[in-house]
Image 1: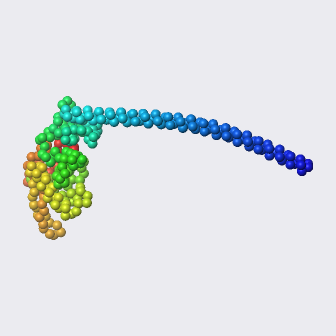
Image 2 (image 1 turned 30 degrees about the vertical axis):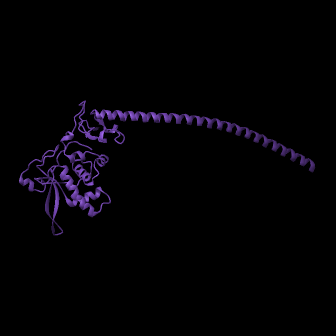
Image 3 (image 1 turned 90 degrees about the vertical axis):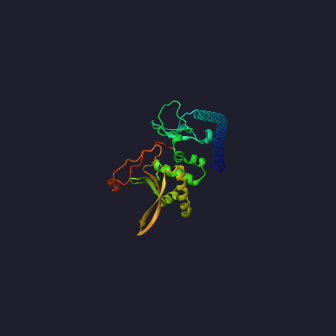
Length: 289
């Protein structure tokens, strides 16, 4: 084969290759155009669907807020009528009631409820495991409040500490209870030094010197809020061979505290024994707050 013929054959092969490549390019361009058209269609559909979903979401949000507002208004009205509402159904941060104050209480059905102070259930469905609000000591009323309600009720730190301290002795769920069981004549007591450490655990960042001042102020608040159901006694202590006198805040055994059963009187011999020196902690009303 001559060189000329070989060139012609090579040219023919190249032309065939170019034709095949052009066919492929045309096919790819057609496919790309089809994909772009489909992409535009899907994007338009997505935008329409998103717009519809946003509109529905906005409508549902507005309806949900409207229903929430209606429920809160109905709850407030029912509470003002004396209703007791289960705590899990009431948002205390948004509900509008007189003085923004609700009580949390327990009933014999095992549920906890909110009510306005001193309001008995008009339907009388279950019994309340607590005394009427007006029969409680001021310290008991404050101890029933949660942290947020307590802060809104009083700005005085010693008063809040007194309420927390009282709640610690009657509510096992609090956890940090510095009270000690007493003897025949003392129901429970707390040493001033233990109270100081407890205050520093409750109020982070409080210095030792300021905690000492808060001990006296908290004790004064307890005396006032319990209407002198508690008392201050001084007892000689001995530590590391040194004798010193320390204040104790005590609850006498014969003190009448609403909702608490008095201690059972025991013999002197029993009182003197180490095992019986501590009286059984009194049962209290099933109050939560």
